[in-house]
Length: 386
Ligand SMILES: *Cc1c(COP(=O)(O)O)cnc(C)c1O
Image (cartoon, rainbow, N blue to C red; front, side, top):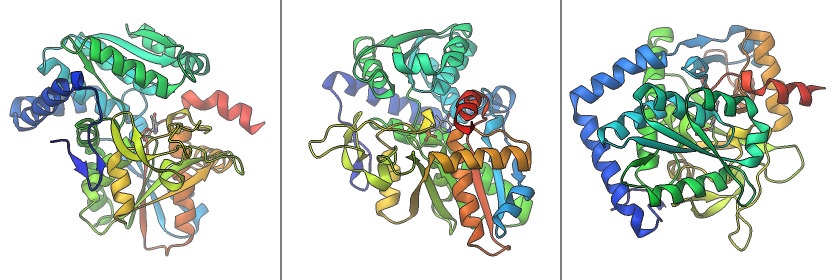
């Protein structure tokens, strides 16, 4: 029975994929209960991924907000420079447990492709990454990284030649090679059980936030903020906090000010099916996917994970959008106030956090998930800031 989050989620896939999804769920369930698997995951989280990541009090950035304190959960310090490796590590170990010698993945900006190539190399698995031709041109350095890590990057020439076409190609490959291949999906999207498994592996973020907040300031924060593309770093932050009184704020890409709907699936989309799951999507009146636009490639996706659709409709989390220009401003704030170059994705969350801090008293604490570092975005920032 496909898992749902309220009316969202499910598994809208061809019959041939059902056994693989069932096998994946069963493997994950048995792995979670297996002390040996848990010990191996814990060991690699510390020795390979670099966890736990710190919780940092951004004092000078907080002054800019002139209100609540802002604390940063430093996922930019994870191996590879983003939270993506938390999920790639977990799923890589599941592939080994299923005796599958081959990994495939989709990638847009290339961050998830790099994380998959890293774990593929570390575990000795053959790795192929589907990537749209347009993205290959835009994200050259990550293509080179993947190739140096021993992965094969497969150019996708269908459709708009971007992320959604790469996902379609990866799904087709999986259907053809399901006995030898694990599809290492990169966000909390897609058919059940992916949204649940990805949320589980990313929940290490929120569990650390819980523990570290109590150690740092004696209680849980008042507000947790994270950016939302497919929604994996946000659900990893929110999930362990969802039964507490902590307010949850997801931040989507609003795109360039005054033009289009950006990539804000929750704020401006409507319910529909995309890539095997019922959730919010940016679609036109005929149900055709809309082209998304965002300065950050990692948020540039027309869909969003089904658990976020549920958290939105149930009112447990709030979702707002932030424009390209605002995210760019926040990039420079964090660079100049704290000496940290953020990726453009979490720069959206930083902007929203400073906006929230202004409206809140000094005793309140805001934790923002800094999902990745900005080295990959320097060229985009330089061009946009001219
Ligand atoms: C991919 C990416 C995102 C967006 O993905 P989610 O699944 O929504 O977390 C956000 N930040 C960084 C740094 C990324 O690489």
